[in-house]
Image (tube, rainbow, N blue to C red; front, side, top):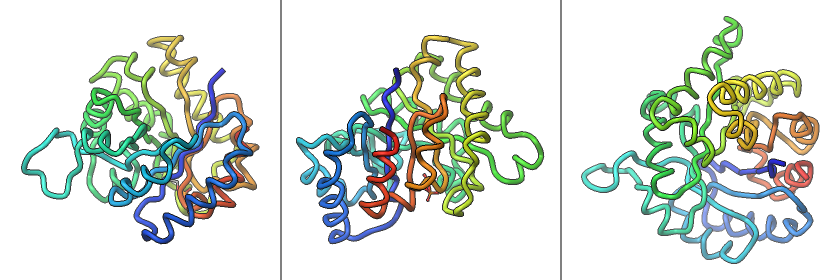
Amino acid sequence: MRRPLVAGNWKMNGSLESVRSLLDGIGRGVGDVKSAEVAVCPPYIYLPEVEKLLSGSDIAWGGQDLSTESSGAYTGEVAASMLNDFGCKYVIVGHSERRTYHAESDQLVAKKYAVARAAGLVPILCIGETLEEREAGTTNEVVARQLDAVIALEGVDALAHGVIAYEPVWAIGTGKTATPDQAQEVHAFIRSRVAEKSSEVAEGLRILYGGSMKPGNAAELIGKSDIDGGLIGGASLTAEDFLGICTAAD
Ligand code: PGA
Protein backbone atom coordinates (compact mmCIF):
# COMPACT_ATOMS: atom_id res chain seq x y z
CA MET A 1 0.00 0.00 0.00
CA ARG A 2 1.28 3.44 -0.94
CA ARG A 3 0.75 6.01 1.79
CA PRO A 4 -0.97 9.07 0.31
CA LEU A 5 0.93 12.35 0.46
CA VAL A 6 -0.63 15.80 0.38
CA ALA A 7 1.97 18.53 -0.07
CA GLY A 8 1.26 22.25 -0.09
CA ASN A 9 3.24 24.32 -2.56
CA TRP A 10 2.92 27.83 -1.22
CA LYS A 11 4.84 29.32 -4.16
CA MET A 12 5.75 32.99 -3.58
CA ASN A 13 2.89 33.73 -1.22
CA GLY A 14 2.54 34.80 2.37
CA SER A 15 4.21 36.85 5.06
CA LEU A 16 5.72 35.94 8.39
CA GLU A 17 2.37 36.66 9.96
CA SER A 18 0.34 34.58 7.50
CA VAL A 19 2.81 31.68 7.74
CA ARG A 20 2.28 31.61 11.49
CA SER A 21 -1.49 31.70 11.30
CA LEU A 22 -1.67 29.17 8.45
CA LEU A 23 0.50 26.68 10.35
CA ASP A 24 -1.49 27.29 13.48
CA GLY A 25 -4.68 26.45 11.58
CA ILE A 26 -3.21 23.36 9.94
CA GLY A 27 -1.78 22.23 13.28
CA ARG A 28 -5.20 22.41 14.92
CA GLY A 29 -6.84 20.17 12.35
CA VAL A 30 -4.08 17.80 11.33
CA GLY A 31 -4.92 15.40 14.16
CA ASP A 32 -8.02 14.42 12.19
CA VAL A 33 -5.88 13.25 9.28
CA LYS A 34 -5.48 9.54 9.86
CA SER A 35 -3.39 7.94 7.16
CA ALA A 36 -2.20 10.60 4.73
CA GLU A 37 1.20 12.20 5.09
CA VAL A 38 1.09 16.00 5.16
CA ALA A 39 3.84 18.39 4.05
CA VAL A 40 4.25 22.09 3.25
CA CYS A 41 6.75 23.81 0.97
CA PRO A 42 7.12 27.48 1.94
CA PRO A 43 9.31 30.10 0.31
CA TYR A 44 12.93 29.54 1.44
CA ILE A 45 12.98 32.58 3.68
CA TYR A 46 10.29 31.14 5.96
CA LEU A 47 11.96 27.74 6.43
CA PRO A 48 13.54 28.64 9.81
CA GLU A 49 10.14 29.71 11.11
CA VAL A 50 8.44 26.63 9.66
CA GLU A 51 11.05 24.39 11.25
CA LYS A 52 10.54 26.12 14.59
CA LEU A 53 6.77 25.72 14.42
CA LEU A 54 6.57 22.19 12.99
CA SER A 55 9.41 20.37 14.74
CA GLY A 56 8.01 17.43 16.64
CA SER A 57 4.71 17.58 14.71
CA ASP A 58 3.44 15.08 12.14
CA ILE A 59 3.78 17.66 9.36
CA ALA A 60 6.86 17.53 7.14
CA TRP A 61 8.26 20.46 5.17
CA GLY A 62 10.43 21.09 2.16
CA GLY A 63 11.86 23.55 -0.33
CA GLN A 64 10.35 24.60 -3.65
CA ASP A 65 13.59 24.27 -5.59
CA LEU A 66 17.34 23.85 -5.05
CA SER A 67 20.61 24.55 -6.78
CA THR A 68 22.56 21.92 -8.68
CA GLU A 69 25.71 23.30 -7.05
CA SER A 70 26.86 22.67 -3.50
CA SER A 71 28.27 26.14 -2.76
CA GLY A 72 30.04 29.08 -4.32
CA ALA A 73 29.40 32.06 -6.53
CA TYR A 74 25.77 31.40 -7.48
CA THR A 75 23.90 34.52 -6.43
CA GLY A 76 20.35 33.87 -5.33
CA GLU A 77 20.68 30.08 -5.25
CA VAL A 78 20.07 27.75 -2.31
CA ALA A 79 22.00 24.50 -1.84
CA ALA A 80 20.66 21.12 -0.75
CA SER A 81 22.80 21.25 2.41
CA MET A 82 21.04 24.50 3.36
CA LEU A 83 17.66 22.81 3.06
CA ASN A 84 19.02 20.06 5.30
CA ASP A 85 20.13 22.67 7.82
CA PHE A 86 16.49 23.62 8.32
CA GLY A 87 15.11 20.11 8.57
CA CYS A 88 13.56 19.78 5.11
CA LYS A 89 12.40 16.32 4.15
CA TYR A 90 11.16 17.19 0.66
CA VAL A 91 12.13 19.45 -2.21
CA ILE A 92 10.09 20.19 -5.32
CA VAL A 93 12.07 19.95 -8.57
CA GLY A 94 11.02 20.87 -12.08
CA HIS A 95 7.82 22.70 -11.26
CA SER A 96 6.32 23.98 -14.50
CA GLU A 97 6.73 27.57 -13.29
CA ARG A 98 10.50 26.95 -13.00
CA ARG A 99 10.55 25.21 -16.37
CA THR A 100 8.68 28.12 -17.96
CA TYR A 101 9.97 31.26 -16.21
CA HIS A 102 13.51 30.04 -15.52
CA ALA A 103 13.97 27.93 -18.64
CA GLU A 104 14.78 24.77 -16.67
CA SER A 105 15.45 21.92 -19.08
CA ASP A 106 14.67 18.24 -18.50
CA GLN A 107 18.41 17.66 -18.02
CA LEU A 108 18.78 20.42 -15.44
CA VAL A 109 15.75 19.11 -13.54
CA ALA A 110 17.23 15.60 -13.60
CA LYS A 111 20.45 16.99 -12.15
CA LYS A 112 18.47 18.72 -9.39
CA TYR A 113 16.71 15.43 -8.68
CA ALA A 114 20.09 13.70 -8.35
CA VAL A 115 21.55 16.42 -6.13
CA ALA A 116 18.50 16.34 -3.84
CA ARG A 117 18.70 12.59 -3.49
CA ALA A 118 22.41 12.62 -2.81
CA ALA A 119 21.72 15.02 0.05
CA GLY A 120 19.09 12.71 1.52
CA LEU A 121 16.17 14.92 0.50
CA VAL A 122 13.08 13.40 -1.12
CA PRO A 123 12.59 15.10 -4.50
CA ILE A 124 9.07 15.74 -5.72
CA LEU A 125 9.55 15.65 -9.49
CA CYS A 126 6.92 17.68 -11.36
CA ILE A 127 6.03 16.66 -14.89
CA GLY A 128 3.13 17.57 -17.13
CA GLU A 129 2.05 18.84 -20.51
CA THR A 130 0.87 22.26 -21.68
CA LEU A 131 -2.56 22.77 -23.22
CA GLU A 132 -0.97 22.95 -26.65
CA GLU A 133 0.77 19.63 -26.10
CA ARG A 134 -2.43 17.99 -24.84
CA GLU A 135 -4.37 19.24 -27.83
CA ALA A 136 -1.67 17.95 -30.14
CA GLY A 137 -2.07 14.52 -28.52
CA THR A 138 1.48 14.46 -27.17
CA THR A 139 0.77 14.24 -23.42
CA ASN A 140 2.34 10.81 -22.96
CA GLU A 141 5.32 11.72 -25.07
CA VAL A 142 5.98 14.84 -22.98
CA VAL A 143 5.69 13.20 -19.57
CA ALA A 144 7.77 10.24 -20.77
CA ARG A 145 10.52 12.60 -21.94
CA GLN A 146 10.52 14.46 -18.60
CA LEU A 147 10.59 11.21 -16.65
CA ASP A 148 13.18 9.52 -18.87
CA ALA A 149 15.64 12.37 -18.26
CA VAL A 150 15.80 11.36 -14.59
CA ILE A 151 15.98 7.64 -15.36
CA ALA A 152 18.75 8.25 -17.92
CA LEU A 153 20.87 10.17 -15.43
CA GLU A 154 20.17 8.21 -12.28
CA GLY A 155 18.70 4.85 -13.21
CA VAL A 156 15.19 3.70 -12.35
CA ASP A 157 16.12 2.93 -8.74
CA ALA A 158 16.42 6.67 -8.09
CA LEU A 159 12.64 6.83 -8.37
CA ALA A 160 12.35 4.59 -5.32
CA HIS A 161 13.57 7.56 -3.29
CA GLY A 162 11.36 10.24 -4.77
CA VAL A 163 7.81 11.25 -5.53
CA ILE A 164 6.30 12.22 -8.89
CA ALA A 165 3.75 14.99 -9.26
CA TYR A 166 1.77 14.91 -12.49
CA GLU A 167 0.70 18.50 -13.04
CA PRO A 168 -0.93 19.33 -16.35
CA VAL A 169 0.22 22.91 -16.92
CA TRP A 170 -3.21 23.93 -18.18
CA ALA A 171 -4.74 22.97 -14.82
CA ILE A 172 -2.32 24.86 -12.58
CA GLY A 173 -3.90 27.87 -10.92
CA THR A 174 -6.57 28.01 -13.61
CA GLY A 175 -9.46 26.42 -11.75
CA LYS A 176 -9.54 23.89 -14.60
CA THR A 177 -8.92 20.46 -13.10
CA ALA A 178 -8.17 17.35 -15.10
CA THR A 179 -11.12 14.99 -14.69
CA PRO A 180 -10.35 12.02 -12.46
CA ASP A 181 -10.35 9.78 -15.55
CA GLN A 182 -8.05 12.10 -17.51
CA ALA A 183 -5.62 12.24 -14.58
CA GLN A 184 -5.81 8.51 -13.90
CA GLU A 185 -4.99 7.75 -17.52
CA VAL A 186 -1.74 9.72 -17.36
CA HIS A 187 -0.86 8.40 -13.89
CA ALA A 188 -1.30 4.84 -15.13
CA PHE A 189 0.87 5.64 -18.14
CA ILE A 190 3.63 7.05 -15.88
CA ARG A 191 3.51 3.97 -13.67
CA SER A 192 3.62 1.63 -16.66
CA ARG A 193 6.56 3.55 -18.09
CA VAL A 194 8.48 3.03 -14.84
CA ALA A 195 7.34 -0.61 -14.70
CA GLU A 196 9.07 -1.24 -18.04
CA LYS A 197 12.30 -0.74 -16.10
CA SER A 198 11.28 -2.04 -12.67
CA SER A 199 7.87 -3.29 -11.59
CA GLU A 200 8.92 -3.08 -7.96
CA VAL A 201 9.85 0.61 -8.18
CA ALA A 202 6.66 1.32 -10.15
CA GLU A 203 4.50 -0.38 -7.56
CA GLY A 204 5.94 1.62 -4.66
CA LEU A 205 6.11 4.97 -6.47
CA ARG A 206 3.82 7.71 -5.19
CA ILE A 207 2.37 9.74 -8.04
CA LEU A 208 0.59 12.90 -6.90
CA TYR A 209 -1.83 14.93 -8.96
CA GLY A 210 -1.51 18.72 -9.03
CA GLY A 211 -3.60 21.38 -10.74
CA SER A 212 -6.56 23.12 -9.09
CA MET A 213 -7.13 20.34 -6.57
CA LYS A 214 -9.66 21.42 -3.95
CA PRO A 215 -11.60 19.81 -1.10
CA GLY A 216 -14.50 19.34 -3.51
CA ASN A 217 -12.62 17.29 -6.11
CA ALA A 218 -9.82 15.72 -4.05
CA ALA A 219 -11.59 12.54 -2.92
CA GLU A 220 -12.61 11.61 -6.44
CA LEU A 221 -9.13 12.26 -7.84
CA ILE A 222 -7.22 10.54 -5.04
CA GLY A 223 -9.74 7.71 -5.16
CA LYS A 224 -8.30 6.64 -8.50
CA SER A 225 -6.01 3.66 -8.28
CA ASP A 226 -2.84 5.38 -9.52
CA ILE A 227 -3.32 8.75 -7.81
CA ASP A 228 -1.50 8.76 -4.50
CA GLY A 229 -2.15 12.25 -3.21
CA GLY A 230 -1.81 15.84 -4.33
CA LEU A 231 0.55 18.75 -4.79
CA ILE A 232 -1.60 21.69 -3.85
CA GLY A 233 -1.03 25.33 -4.79
CA GLY A 234 -3.86 27.80 -4.21
CA ALA A 235 -5.87 25.60 -1.87
CA SER A 236 -2.86 25.06 0.39
CA LEU A 237 -2.94 28.71 1.44
CA THR A 238 -6.00 28.35 3.65
CA ALA A 239 -5.97 25.85 6.49
CA GLU A 240 -9.56 24.80 5.94
CA ASP A 241 -9.13 23.94 2.26
CA PHE A 242 -5.78 22.25 2.77
CA LEU A 243 -7.09 20.14 5.64
CA GLY A 244 -10.16 19.31 3.57
CA ILE A 245 -7.89 17.81 0.93
CA CYS A 246 -5.80 15.99 3.56
CA THR A 247 -8.86 14.32 5.05
CA ALA A 248 -10.16 13.49 1.57
CA ALA A 249 -6.85 11.72 0.96
CA ASP A 250 -7.53 9.53 3.98
P1 PGA B 1 -2.75 24.92 -8.02
O1 PGA B 1 -1.16 24.71 -8.16
O2 PGA B 1 -3.25 23.94 -7.00
O3 PGA B 1 -2.90 26.35 -7.56
O4 PGA B 1 -3.34 24.68 -9.37
C1 PGA B 1 -0.59 23.42 -8.11
C2 PGA B 1 0.89 23.52 -8.27
O5 PGA B 1 1.35 24.37 -9.06
O6 PGA B 1 1.66 22.79 -7.65
